[in-house]
Structures are given as structure tokens and as C-alpha cells.
Image (cartoon, rainbow, N blue to C red; front, side, top):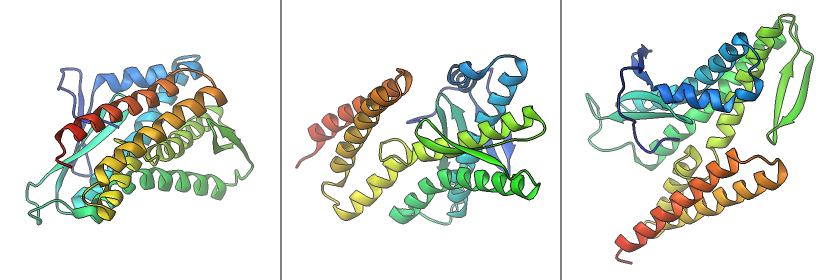
Length: 249
């Protein structure tokens, strides 16, 4: 959900996964703490929530990064703020230009798909282990499975990991830039209308973000999510004004 990489700090966590460099900015942990404060009752619950957020978001970004590498590019991942960013350059690339519209769409889809795949594997593993009794309920407007396991802490971890994988994937498929769905919508609209596709994608982003903010506020209350999507609507509006100012049409 990032527009650009944050500056490096001495508190960054750096490692490599499947040959892809990963950097975790300290603000990632701070935002995760803020998002999960309601379910944190002790040190174990904090660790469970951090693990679920870290694994879920990392798998999402790995989906992007591995697809970038499949196109011959050199990817890296930055986890920061509300999510992360998978970036790439053309080091040792077999292509002289970007991956094209279809490639960009596939790269954007690969993040949510990776999270959904992990969720599906977790559910299948739980069912294969004989814990098939599950309660399906709506959380934040989405149908999320919860399983009853003998180890309550393990159950909490699986519940929260499933929530992060499914909710983060659905959230990112909304046609709001810079979310994955917004980037997909931009590529499709630009493909259909090379002259006016970018402007239309910005208008769609503004409408969708404002609609989510208003619906969430009146349906579930709370201010964090409406403020976040309100900010996305505002940032897209500012970008649209700047684009209109630069555009010769």
C-alpha cells in the first residue's frame, strides 16, 4: 500500500527469503501494534498478532516479488506502515522494458493470490488433521472461518493469520490506487483508452475510496478505516488535479 520506500534506519530488520532481500521498517511494528491493540491482553497475544501480521503481509509481498522475478527482474521487499511494497529493477533482466499491461496485472494479482493460497492451505491442513468443525462468521464485513483447536494459542494464531490473509487480500483488490486493485484497474482502463484511462482510473479510485469510507462509518462505526480510505480518496483527488493540470487534453 506504499507509494515509495521509506528511508533506511538503524532499527530496520534485514534478511533474505528465497533469494529476495526483505527490509522491515520499525514503523511496520508500530502500526501493527495500533491495529491490534484491542485483541492484545498479554505478551503472548502480542506475539501472536505480530506473527500473523508479519507472515500474512510478507506472503502477500512475496507473491508480487516472485512474479516480478519470473519476468526476469530483481525484486526486493519493504514492510512499512499499513503493509508493504515489492519493488524491482532491471538488473540482469531479460527484458529491456517493463512487463507490459498483462504482466503488471499479473504482478498485482499475485499478492492477494498468495495470501488466499496460504489461507486455503491452512484450512485444508486443519481439516486434514481432523479439526473440521468451524464457525463461519462475518468480521469487518467478510466471511472468515474460525476453527476450534485443542491448543487455544495455536487456534488464535491460525484465526488471526486467516483473517490477515483473507482481509488483506480482499482489501487490496478494491479498485483504489495505490492498492493492487487500483493498479489493476489503471492498467485495464489504460489499455481500453490510452488517452483517458489514467484519468478514469483516478476518478474510480476517488469514488470507491469515498464509498468505502462512508459505508464503513455508518455500517460498523469507528474512525480508523474511514479516515484511511478518506485519505486515499483525497490523495487520488489531488493526483487527479495535478494530472489535469499537466495533461494537454
